[in-house]
Amino acid sequence: MGQPTSNYFSNRVLKINVGFLLAAGPGHSHDTTFDAPAVRVADDLTLDYIRGPLRLSRNKEGVLVQGELQVGFSGECYRCLDTVTANLTIEFEELFAYPSPAAAEFSLHDDGVLDLGPLLRAEVFIATANNLLCRPDCRGLCPDCGANLNTTQCACAAEAVDPRMAKLKELLESHKR
Image (tube, rainbow, N blue to C red; front, side):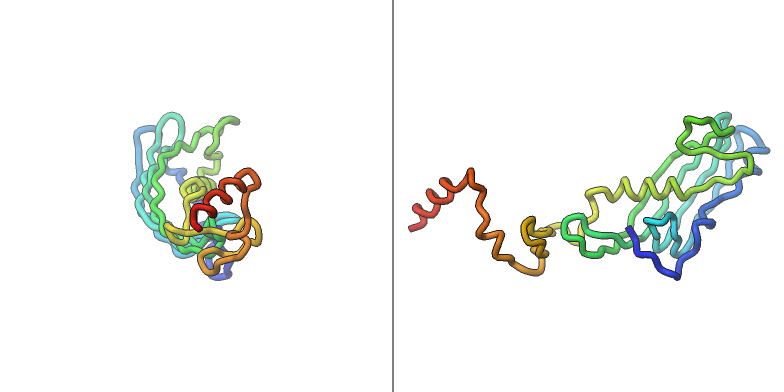
Protein backbone atom coordinates (compact mmCIF):
# COMPACT_ATOMS: atom_id res chain seq x y z
CA MET A 1 0.00 0.00 0.00
CA GLY A 2 1.63 3.18 -1.05
CA GLN A 3 4.46 3.91 -3.37
CA PRO A 4 7.81 4.77 -1.82
CA THR A 5 8.77 8.31 -2.70
CA SER A 6 11.55 10.57 -1.61
CA ASN A 7 9.12 13.36 -0.60
CA TYR A 8 7.99 11.96 2.73
CA PHE A 9 8.97 12.39 6.33
CA SER A 10 10.42 9.45 8.20
CA ASN A 11 8.29 7.66 10.75
CA ARG A 12 10.06 9.58 13.53
CA VAL A 13 7.23 12.14 13.38
CA LEU A 14 4.97 9.37 14.71
CA LYS A 15 7.01 9.03 17.89
CA ILE A 16 5.58 11.10 20.71
CA ASN A 17 7.42 11.74 23.96
CA VAL A 18 4.93 11.06 26.76
CA GLY A 19 7.46 11.06 29.59
CA PHE A 20 5.65 14.03 31.17
CA LEU A 21 2.47 11.92 31.42
CA LEU A 22 4.34 8.98 32.92
CA ALA A 23 5.87 11.29 35.53
CA ALA A 24 2.55 13.02 36.28
CA GLY A 25 0.85 9.74 37.12
CA PRO A 26 -2.64 8.37 36.59
CA GLY A 27 -5.47 10.80 35.95
CA HIS A 28 -3.57 13.23 33.76
CA SER A 29 -4.25 13.73 30.06
CA HIS A 30 -3.00 15.75 27.14
CA ASP A 31 -4.89 16.75 23.99
CA THR A 32 -3.03 17.49 20.80
CA THR A 33 -3.70 17.79 17.09
CA PHE A 34 -1.67 15.73 14.69
CA ASP A 35 -0.90 17.31 11.32
CA ALA A 36 1.81 15.81 9.17
CA PRO A 37 2.41 15.73 5.43
CA ALA A 38 3.51 12.54 3.66
CA VAL A 39 4.92 10.06 6.18
CA ARG A 40 6.51 6.70 5.57
CA VAL A 41 4.85 4.70 8.34
CA ALA A 42 6.55 1.38 7.48
CA ASP A 43 8.35 -0.22 4.56
CA ASP A 44 5.00 -1.22 3.07
CA LEU A 45 2.94 1.90 3.86
CA THR A 46 3.36 5.56 3.01
CA LEU A 47 0.56 7.94 3.94
CA ASP A 48 0.02 11.15 1.96
CA TYR A 49 -1.04 13.01 5.10
CA ILE A 50 -2.15 12.43 8.69
CA ARG A 51 -4.45 14.92 10.42
CA GLY A 52 -6.67 14.93 13.44
CA PRO A 53 -7.04 15.14 17.21
CA LEU A 54 -5.32 12.84 19.69
CA ARG A 55 -5.99 12.43 23.38
CA LEU A 56 -3.29 10.87 25.54
CA SER A 57 -4.54 9.82 28.99
CA ARG A 58 -2.36 8.38 31.75
CA ASN A 59 -3.90 5.58 33.78
CA LYS A 60 -2.47 2.96 36.12
CA GLU A 61 -1.87 0.52 33.22
CA GLY A 62 -0.10 2.96 30.86
CA VAL A 63 -1.19 5.60 28.36
CA LEU A 64 -4.53 5.39 26.58
CA VAL A 65 -4.38 6.87 23.07
CA GLN A 66 -7.67 7.95 21.52
CA GLY A 67 -7.87 9.51 18.10
CA GLU A 68 -9.79 10.15 14.97
CA LEU A 69 -7.21 10.70 12.27
CA GLN A 70 -7.79 11.43 8.61
CA VAL A 71 -5.20 9.76 6.40
CA GLY A 72 -4.65 9.75 2.66
CA PHE A 73 -2.79 7.08 0.74
CA SER A 74 -2.33 5.35 -2.59
CA GLY A 75 -2.97 1.64 -2.88
CA GLU A 76 -4.19 -0.99 -5.29
CA CYS A 77 -7.78 -1.86 -6.09
CA TYR A 78 -8.22 -5.36 -4.72
CA ARG A 79 -10.14 -6.50 -7.80
CA CYS A 80 -8.24 -5.02 -10.77
CA LEU A 81 -4.94 -3.86 -9.20
CA ASP A 82 -5.24 -0.30 -10.59
CA THR A 83 -3.76 2.45 -8.41
CA VAL A 84 -6.33 4.08 -6.14
CA THR A 85 -5.98 7.24 -4.08
CA ALA A 86 -8.09 7.03 -0.94
CA ASN A 87 -8.94 9.11 2.11
CA LEU A 88 -9.86 7.33 5.32
CA THR A 89 -10.92 8.27 8.80
CA ILE A 90 -9.22 6.00 11.31
CA GLU A 91 -10.80 5.90 14.75
CA PHE A 92 -8.91 4.11 17.49
CA GLU A 93 -8.63 3.69 21.22
CA GLU A 94 -5.55 1.76 22.27
CA LEU A 95 -3.71 1.25 25.52
CA PHE A 96 0.07 1.50 25.41
CA ALA A 97 1.03 -0.51 28.47
CA TYR A 98 3.59 0.82 30.97
CA PRO A 99 5.69 -0.70 32.36
CA SER A 100 6.06 -2.89 29.32
CA PRO A 101 4.64 -6.41 29.94
CA ALA A 102 5.76 -9.17 27.59
CA ALA A 103 2.22 -9.94 26.38
CA ALA A 104 1.16 -6.38 25.40
CA GLU A 105 0.67 -5.64 21.72
CA PHE A 106 1.54 -1.96 22.22
CA SER A 107 3.72 -0.77 25.05
CA LEU A 108 5.93 2.04 26.28
CA HIS A 109 9.51 1.55 27.26
CA ASP A 110 11.37 3.45 29.95
CA ASP A 111 12.39 6.19 27.48
CA GLY A 112 8.75 7.42 27.45
CA VAL A 113 8.42 7.46 23.65
CA LEU A 114 5.11 6.32 22.22
CA ASP A 115 5.35 5.06 18.62
CA LEU A 116 2.08 5.51 16.70
CA GLY A 117 3.53 3.85 13.56
CA PRO A 118 2.60 0.20 14.25
CA LEU A 119 -0.90 1.19 15.41
CA LEU A 120 -1.54 3.35 12.32
CA ARG A 121 -0.21 0.64 10.01
CA ALA A 122 -2.51 -1.98 11.57
CA GLU A 123 -5.56 0.30 11.49
CA VAL A 124 -5.05 1.30 7.82
CA PHE A 125 -4.59 -2.32 6.72
CA ILE A 126 -7.66 -3.43 8.68
CA ALA A 127 -9.74 -0.59 7.21
CA THR A 128 -8.71 -1.38 3.64
CA ALA A 129 -8.61 -5.20 3.67
CA ASN A 130 -10.83 -6.30 0.75
CA ASN A 131 -12.32 -2.86 0.81
CA LEU A 132 -10.25 -0.69 -1.51
CA LEU A 133 -11.94 -0.38 -4.90
CA CYS A 134 -11.17 1.89 -7.84
CA ARG A 135 -14.94 2.22 -8.31
CA PRO A 136 -17.95 0.42 -6.80
CA ASP A 137 -18.71 -1.54 -9.98
CA CYS A 138 -15.13 -2.68 -10.64
CA ARG A 139 -15.23 -5.86 -12.74
CA GLY A 140 -11.71 -6.99 -11.82
CA LEU A 141 -9.38 -9.18 -13.83
CA CYS A 142 -10.18 -12.13 -16.06
CA PRO A 143 -9.20 -15.29 -14.14
CA ASP A 144 -7.88 -16.91 -17.32
CA CYS A 145 -5.92 -14.26 -19.25
CA GLY A 146 -5.58 -11.50 -16.62
CA ALA A 147 -7.16 -8.76 -18.75
CA ASN A 148 -8.63 -5.80 -16.90
CA LEU A 149 -12.37 -6.24 -17.52
CA ASN A 150 -13.00 -2.54 -16.80
CA THR A 151 -11.06 -1.50 -19.90
CA THR A 152 -11.34 -4.46 -22.27
CA GLN A 153 -13.56 -7.41 -23.09
CA CYS A 154 -11.51 -10.59 -23.37
CA ALA A 155 -12.54 -13.51 -25.54
CA CYS A 156 -11.78 -16.19 -22.99
CA ALA A 157 -14.55 -15.08 -20.63
CA ALA A 158 -17.20 -15.70 -23.28
CA GLU A 159 -15.77 -19.04 -24.37
CA ALA A 160 -15.01 -20.55 -21.00
CA VAL A 161 -17.76 -22.87 -19.79
CA ASP A 162 -17.61 -24.93 -16.67
CA PRO A 163 -17.86 -28.58 -17.84
CA ARG A 164 -20.55 -29.21 -15.22
CA MET A 165 -22.67 -26.51 -16.86
CA ALA A 166 -22.16 -27.54 -20.51
CA LYS A 167 -25.55 -29.26 -20.80
CA LEU A 168 -27.30 -26.26 -19.29
CA LYS A 169 -25.59 -23.99 -21.85
CA GLU A 170 -26.75 -26.28 -24.68
CA LEU A 171 -30.29 -26.13 -23.32
CA LEU A 172 -30.21 -22.32 -23.16
CA GLU A 173 -28.85 -22.05 -26.68
CA SER A 174 -31.54 -24.40 -28.02
CA HIS A 175 -34.26 -22.15 -26.52
CA LYS A 176 -32.74 -19.06 -28.15
CA ARG A 177 -33.18 -20.56 -31.64
